Image (cartoon, rainbow, N blue to C red; front, side, top):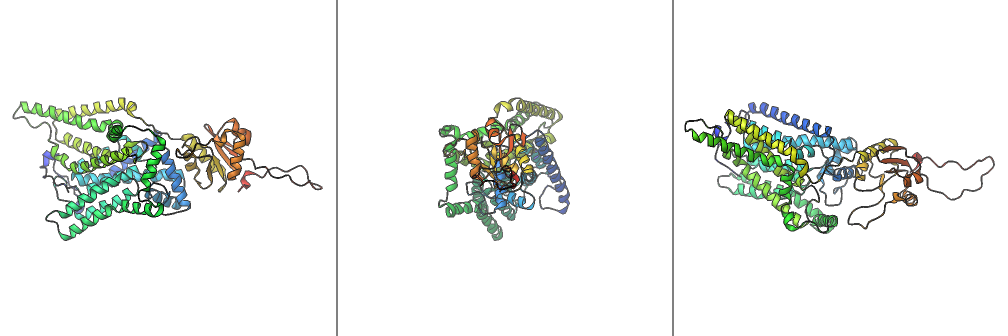
Length: 554
């Protein structure tokens, strides 16, 4: 555990406020509850703003996760996907689908709630790291509002909860500037948080390794009681339980302990056979962090420049009061979490060189480091405003406004990948859910992975049949929606009662006018497949009757 020297009141940004110690006197409960409520309300406001601006998904993976959770709710099993994706997010969402309804709206409500829970974990972590109530509040508010945190707070992916759980775990080992050392039982809470994090995403795995090593070092420290040593040793073992369980499961289920790494590497090689060079991959994660959140990296520079200028001005007059508080000692508690985050990024960079890392949006995997940086920026900025002279405050405010302006101007030119809400695909899926009877088979045109948004909105993955595979590891297959004859054969193969595809002549030639359209997409009732010729009509029977309605189809 890191145990820096206690910071004297004003030099670290002021003495600890009442209620700053977690688990302290009952009088501390009310301020803590108020601050936690404020953080949650602020996060809810940020999430509502993000949704109002039209954000819905980081990528098609968001919808894929919803579809797989819906499938798990229909037929629960220990390994929800049988692939490299870790199980906890599917267990959680699938259980809530069973309890509520397996819809995209429920999935998004769960994501919103998990965003609030993540903000609460970040605030608790900040209190453990700083030991200062106001500094922790400022850091937690910023950590909940920077763009990637804001977007992932409403996306149906587990990156933000996993990063918040990882931060919570690392913070459980930190000694704040004014002490005391954290109780050993707190490390057990951190270890349990890592079990959830490591069974949700792979990027917390290096954090679990670092946590286990630090917990064992703390247990070996002189002066520890036996009970505390036992708790820390147990915490080290628990932290590694998630990766150990997943590796063991892959050995049993797939015959290879690291089967999941082989799948990830195979997919990445299929998507980009050449890929970037090793040097570019090695620095891809740090570059993505700076590119995606430039304000978080410019703010400490602005803070340091203002502090340097203020101290130079103070040095000219020997009797002048200090214009800017010293912040270096207040930043010391971030050394341990920062070292863990750096170790995580180094491990991810090496994995990327070996094709064992996410195939897109690398900044998602660095969210622990970004949250930690946001906490530090918010914390140190709050301390600076509290302890600086009025002139230094004005200079600091101006510098931060310049940072925001630079971010607003240059951010659109820095981002490589963009969000795709799949509005039309979701809309046609919702229309199909309303207009088609339960259990009616639906054939869905596959252009790209946007069809997953349609399946998620439909909410019946067992009834939906993609018309082809576009997995880059599979041989390319022509879409059956390209011509009426192919569409008729494919619809007959799956017994489709309905069709979802783009509105175009080849589909209309087979199925007639659509029942409903949303943007470029339409919903059709599939014609009944041709049957053998009927015997001659008997007396009193007229012309051949109409084909059975689609509602009667299996």
